[in-house]
Image (tube, rainbow, N blue to C red):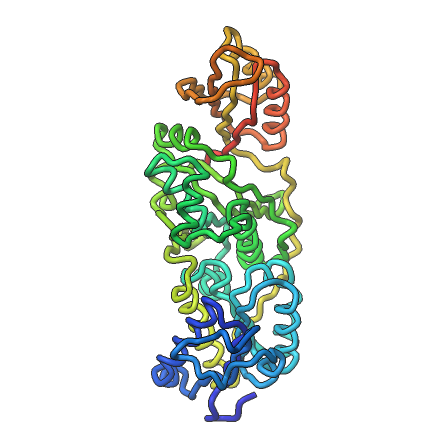
Length: 436
């Protein structure tokens, strides 16, 4: 631990997009940050795989090393930006056991090992801060840890993945198919070469686990999150939503009721009047409903080197102030032991799209299956025309879109599976929740 008035040493693990920008902010704002903290702050080391490949004008090459543990053991604040859940966990635990506080943007690490890390911080009387792990530059972690501790969070809806929001926005505004919108996102740097983690919802799922843990003070791990991506969303789904005055968004949804805590990621139809409907492009937002504060909205850039580094440096300053004052911030305590709510308790309205043979009586057959299973139909749309053929069938393929009343998801999916066994139904159905 740094002596009084001595520089507070910051060890940086990772010199990639976020790591390099974090170093830049620390170097370029060194004097002003010292004024804000009340103590000097300095980079004591930067760990990276190959120091020879790191070449930024603001980084002193003498600070670069491939010996990560040496950086960990010679810092008052260890900033973990290497990602993953393997060696990152080792270094974070070693830092805290060595008396250093930790700042991280590692959502996967927190979603998998959060309880262990939070306890290690409390046991060692150090801090662990991770604002950038959920919303990038959006301040959502601090409000949940501090601003709303006198309130009761009821639920949270978040657009927490910029890649998928950009893709869905392009599909909405330009009428693009999913594959074309994805390629456009990759060309513009909004999507990785392997976009699986984003488009299948896994990135958002890590963030949902963290949000649920902080919001409800109970352990919600990544394995507790139900995940559905956007790969099945078509231009026809988007067109139907637009005609109804709605948009499709990939949401991270966490809530608590008498059945327990629910953490889920799925595409949903939301009305144009909802605050989240106006979140465009790669921007992110989190909508919080609290018992007393009522509705709150946090909006901004959820990714990118500079925006994420801004949140990381904000955490560094907070922790440095604690060190300068000889204290730590509030511990993260999961004093509740809520169960994970079963999927069968999840109720919503659904928009279901089938590909059908355009024969007389098809709608009656499908409606009969829904009625038999107790799923009430609220609306029908037969105006969507797909441009495909079904081998062995000479007639026209029609799209039939049904919107249900509120029903539980287990029953809905069983009903859809039964409908798909009808001879008049072909291809894969599309199921999208309708947000109330």
